[in-house]
Amino acid sequence: MSQSLRYDRQNQIKKWEQKRLLISKVSVIGAGALGNYVCAGLIGLGIGNIEIYDFDEIEIHNLNRQSMFTEEDIGFNKAEILTKRLQERNSEINIQGYSEKITEKNIATLLNDTDLIIDAVDNIETRAVLSRFSLIKNIPLVHGATSADGGQIAVITRETPCLECFMNTNRKNSSQSCTDNPNPSVVYTTQVISGLMVENTRIILLPLNKLEKPTPPLLYYDLLSPNRFYHVNIQRKKDCICNEILKNAKLEKPTLEKIKVDLDNRVINTVEKIDTNKNNISNKKRTRKFTLSDFI
Ligand SMILES: [Zn+2]
Image (cartoon, rainbow, N blue to C red; front, top):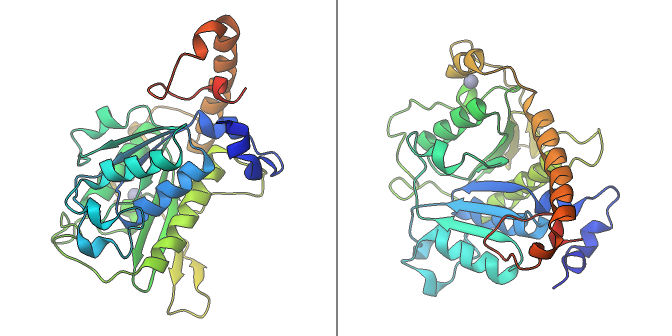
């Protein structure tokens, strides 16, 4: 199937470069409601390499918000079923699902080579792990959270306050997930927030013009407010752990500049590799990362 035909409508957008998305790798943590809609958006964008982590099983009360799952999926692992559904919709991209809980101990191994991390989890403990790792590794983190009355979204980089500057990661029962401690939730708030998360992913990986900026901490979506959407200007907390992490961080480019340069270089290097190795390219299938060969 032709990659150019599949993405024809978005390729018509001015300055759209599908190849940048096809060589990118995004890690989605959480395959629940947000993870379902975010992943549907990522394969629609044509992110070439996606990995999904979730250790939960599908339950009947998930189905009203987690639209990629069916009744027959109940009892199976969320990340694995979501991966299967996504592959049915787009077999040309590399999607891997893992029944794995992301922790302080395994995150450096599992997310080492990713370009962008999506926070679609349901517990504050994992959010803190993601936030710290994204700062240490200088990887952008797209954070989203929802409730029955709205939600919030932010893109976290070394140049913004971190998640722990505005979320209380020390509160009691912080490790409880929504399975142990369910909160009211409804499908449409998830759809709104996940759409913004996908939009921000595209802006980070494929900025189309200088006016487009990722959403800084913190954008609220609030059904109880006449404005619905509003920004709250969060400041870095003086006693937050991010100060210590950034003090020890190596001198590197700002996060968004770094990812742009990384992707630029990867595009150039891939072109050079293709030029010297044309005969081998067509034999490589879905197990390898996407390169320029897939759409030339
Ligand atoms: Zn902080």
